[in-house]
Image 1 (tube, rainbow, N blue to C red):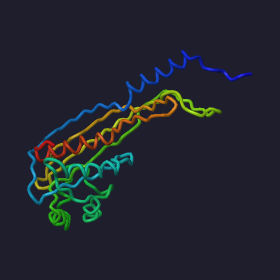
Image 2 (cartoon, one colour; image 1 turned 45 degrees about the horizontal axis):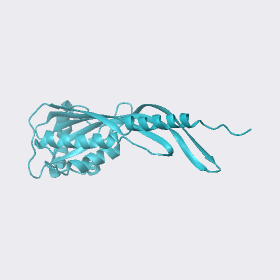
Image 3 (cartoon, rainbow, N blue to C red; image 1 turned 180 degrees about the horizontal axis):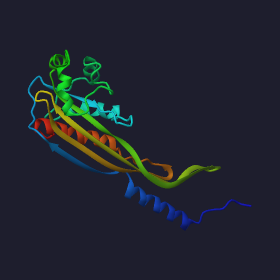
Image 4 (cartoon, one colour; image 1 turned 60 degrees about the horizontal axis):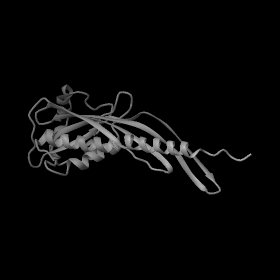
Length: 229
C-alpha cells in the first residue's frame, strides 16, 4: 500500500493558515506602565542607588538576570544614575539585608539604620535610594501543533505552535536620606510568541522580560531624576 499523500489544496490551506498565524501572533507585545509618587525625589552628585531583589513569601524572587539588566540600563542614557554594586552592598550590611532579616516595610527602616555601623556603611557608599524589585515572568498559555518527518527526499516540519508570557515587575523606592517611602513604579508586559513551520521552524519570540527591563529602567531614571531618556 502506498503512503497517503496530502491533496495539494489541503496542503496549500495548511500552509496559508500557518503563515496567517505567524503574522497575527508572531512576537507581538503590549505593556502597561504605572507610577505612584509619595514624595519629591532628586539625586546629587556622588549619590547612588542600589537595586535589590525582594524575595517573595513563597520563596520566589525577581530574576537575577532582570536585576542585572536594570542595573546596566539605569546607568546609561539621559538621567543616568550611579548604581552601587548589589552584592557588595548586601555583604557590607550583612546580615541585615539577608532574606530573613531584611526590612519588609518602610516602617522598619529606622530600626535598620539605628543598628551599629549600618548608617556609616551606607554613607560610605553614597547610597541615597534602595530600590526593592519584586516580580517574575511566567508562561500563561499556549496551543497549536507541529509535525516533523524525514523521508527519502528530505525532511521538514509543518504547523504552528504558540504561547504567551507575562512579565510583571514592581519596584518600591526608599529614600534613605529622608527615611521615607518615595513611591513605586511598575511594568506589566504581555507577549505572544509563535513558531510557524513551513518545512523549517522559524521562532518569533516575544521577549517580554527584556521589554520589562527597558521599561522599568526608564521609569526609575525618570522617577528619581525627572529626566526622560
